[in-house]
Length: 180
Image 1 (tube, rainbow, N blue to C red):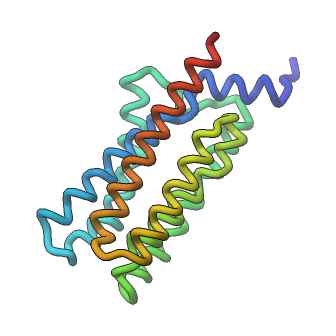
Image 2: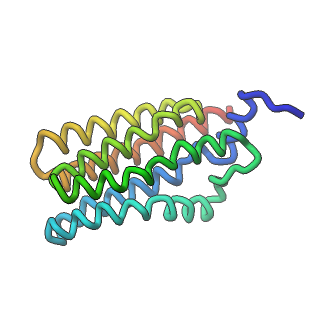
């Protein structure tokens, strides 16, 4: 039986729960990044940012297993599309390393902007306005707090953590509304 695009999207929404465990993991990791600036010297914090980002996906996958959410929707081409949309994040690592080496004060700006912008396609994949909020919230937070304000290593991750957390709440509301 051929499935319609609408059916494939609905299947993704139901099985993957709009991917909220990844956002929950991101909120947690960025909150930890916020606290790191109070504990470690800035040189260490910068390195934690680069390497710590790699923890988001495994933590999100672990959270999804605990909550019974299937982030690995096989057999659905939109599941593959979701993976393809997420994969370019790996290619940003050289950008982060270069920024770290040349203009390290702009790491929060760069990471926040690139990490936030990659969520935009999920607006369509999951039929979720929450992802528009997440994209705009993360990108504008990175721009404002990372580009024009001091204490970027504290304010950017705090703002992104809050945006991701609010995104999880919005997605929960969307999921609850779709059951009615």
